[in-house]
Image (cartoon, rainbow, N blue to C red; front, side):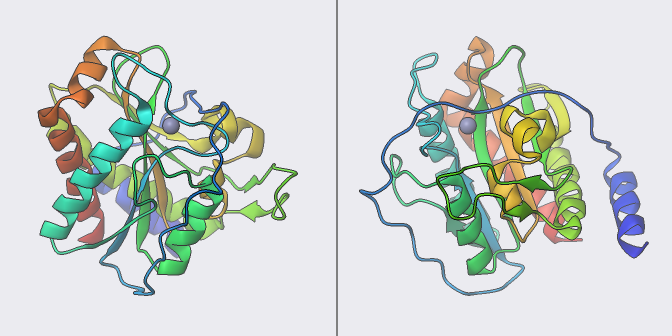
Length: 255
Ligand SMILES: [Zn+2]
């Protein structure tokens, strides 16, 4: 009951409620064996924020050219700006990869954030679908990892606590993004992982299933849309996006 009260209070505070919708990521990807993963520091602090620049991984390299760029490039460039802004605000930052083209599996991105003791994790992505604007996805139910080649095939998660806290995080970041991106990018809402292609199969996105901390997937823009692509490719647009996400994280951590 206490958690439910917290959830309702947060929803009222942020003045926002989730909506239903559909999206997803899939496709072939590069070999992950050639790179080593960053070694997380065990800090266990509310000040440590995990920033996960989405792709490459086994399922999707994110390297398909779209409107003169790639999703992997945009995710990486915004992640570096977000890292810098968060550090200026006094946070510690864990990046889930140390190079733009370093492949890291989605499961490992979550495990890295867990073992580092991060307060929360934001996964940065760009959509390739009809429409225009940003969308936030949180785990709205427990999922089952469906990857028979992995020893953790069948793993269930996240916990009900993580599900509840991820929604609170989603609402806070949405508020920050709405304020900073008003007039630049449309708000397509907070949606459940189960509305994504992978989530509809597993119940939740892979990094959500393995997450022990609040987790949020941010589809920052629709890269196949010319307006959105022009915005998120520009230095100014990326800076604005990073400022917007940082504002949401700061709002969440200040609770
Ligand atoms: Zn993606």
